[in-house]
Length: 214
Image 1 (tube, rainbow, N blue to C red):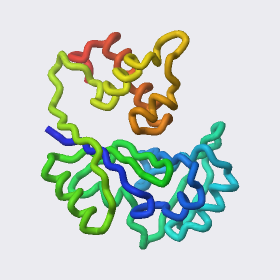
Image 2: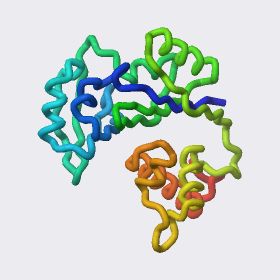
Image 3: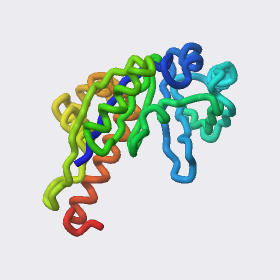
Image 4: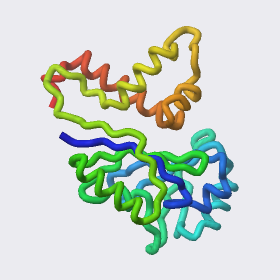
């Protein structure tokens, strides 16, 4: 059994404090890349000029390069100074695995998988000892799924159930993705990705039973 924890942490206590101070309306998401030790950052709802200026002024940022521009979303390759301890550094300890992280309105939210609750408690207590104002929003114990169980994650199931209950799948829709994301306490990009992965999982299960999947 493993434990998944969802944290809410002020950017001022962790990573990119100056950037968020200069870009209060920005939304930032981490995109992990297998070949990299540090993830890339998606930045949305602000201009490239504003982002570049904020990164230049942020003492925690060593370099930043724009990789992709997709509508109002900008993908940056960002490296931090050697002296900077990022949010990932603080959370991914004792074998923890970062599942996703996003930030808006000056607050980071992150989902991390730990080996057990004892490990989670150690990480949480360590953050508090460092003076980080951490808010542990949700804790989920995950057991190994039986062959007949769905492969959806608890977060994907929650997103699908909320979407169904609030009329997201109705025609016309009774709630927008932005409104639904706000109710779930996540960014609309994060909700979009959860739903996309849930759709993919359900389609795969329908085409190929779970018990036959590798």
